[in-house]
Amino acid sequence: MVEKLYNWMMKKAESKHAALVLVLISFIESSFFPLPPDPVLAIVVAKNKNRSLYYAAICSLASVLGGFLGYYIGYGCFEMIGSSILNFYGQMDKFNDLVQSGTISKWAFWIICAKGLTPIPYKIVTIASGFAKVDLATFALASVITRSTRFFVLSLICKKYGECILNFIEKNKKIALIIIIVSVAVGFLLLKLFL
Image 1: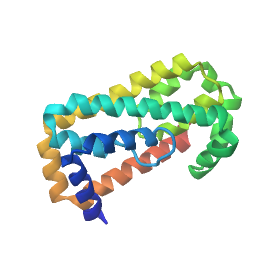
Image 2: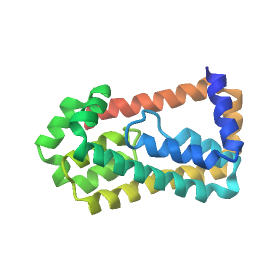
Image 3: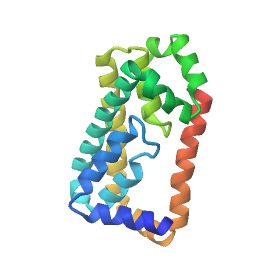
């Protein structure tokens, strides 16, 4: 499985569809998909260093647009879709505390910025923001700042150290996959502790 996932990412990173795959994963991760786009962005940038800023920009834009879908799910489709997503992540109780206490409304900008930089699944924040009817301009500004910062920093790191990263992944595929899984697990743990 590790080999197949790695080969798929490498194949997509070297294909003419690399940008499309990155955009798709970035978009759906912000609204409902469980896996972050970071590993795909890292490999795509490491394989295409001269286009690192382009890939960071499209990843950021797609993530922000996906965030608007998450916002809409919270705003207009919570009962039908949003509650199912939150139940899937086991976050309904904490979501209720966050919304009912007014924390998300009062501190929306800072919560969106803080959560958008961490491994915490961003979709939880986007759905909560929509449900609480956070000002759309505030939501957009915080999303642009946090997602751009996250993906541009990752892109610049991968541009500089891409060869080392790819060599490590190539030699240690299982360890690399474990690191990705642990990162996602840490995100869910932080989500349970702090959201």
